[in-house]
Length: 248
Ligand SMILES: NC(=O)c1ccc[n+]([C@@H]2O[C@H](COP(=O)([O-])OP(=O)(O)OC[C@H]3O[C@@H](n4cnc5c(N)ncnc54)[C@H](OP(=O)(O)O)[C@@H]3O)[C@@H](O)[C@H]2O)c1
Image 1: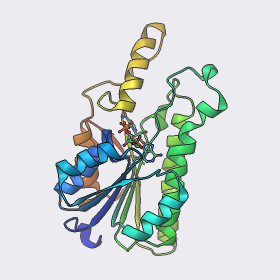
Image 2 (image 1 turned 90 degrees about the horizontal axis):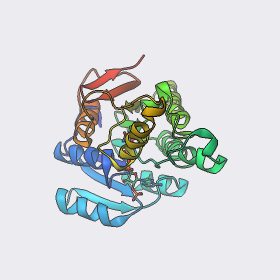
Image 3 (image 1 turned 30 degrees about the vertical axis):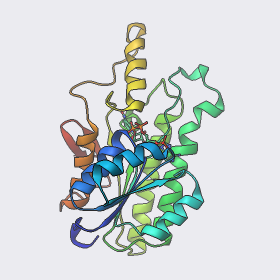
Image 4 (image 1 turned 45 degrees about the vertical axis):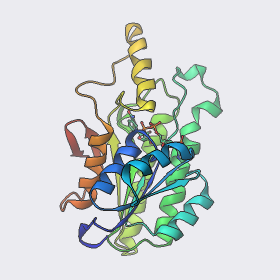
């Protein structure tokens, strides 16, 4: 996407059918991109296509499948790739997790970022393209009711930084940036945890949604700004309802 030009560029968004991903797909489409949206359930993707029109393509697929990552990178060669898909962990204290439930976000969120980032570097995507990954504010301070979620999201931030370094070393010109949104009850995933922490508060749990709630529309606008505005060149950003803040 040379010159941060979004009009007519191809964007691919994983987890596009609801929540943040839907807001991101809608904002990129509104800015003029042709958007391919990936999720497993086709129904909500078709609803989004009815809303956004012919510039949106619905792709029903498992984004954590390495074959899907390879096929879709080969097919779309996106100028903007947003790796947003994520599983909702069981909201339980650590001793109530099994290893399988604890590691759920490693098997989906981290595995999917790993497969797609690798394919983006190997393709390679065009110089000037941007790969944005969704980490979480939980990566900075933990999330004691969601098993391995916070560690998985911290690994996504690391993975993204490693890819940025490889891009630079090989002079590929692909930008890799991670975004760490604050917890918000405005999505299906966030509502589960906002409720779980609110229920635990009386027993000493800290509230996790201070300040105004972050909306999917704000996330969509922030990520569109990140890939189009000059000067937004940090490796990682915290995202709250007041906007993006660089993390060093
Ligand atoms: N909401 C928050 O408070 C918050 C805060 C920080 C970070 N985040 C991160 O932001 C991202 C989006 O969260 P959200 O709250 O918008 O979640 P959400 O409302 O639960 O939406 C998740 C999306 O990901 C898709 N998805 C899940 N597994 C998938 C897979 N294997 N392959 C393809 N698509 C898959 C879902 O569609 P299907 O189920 O149909 O596949 C859906 O479109 C996640 O990575 C999450 O960890 C969220």
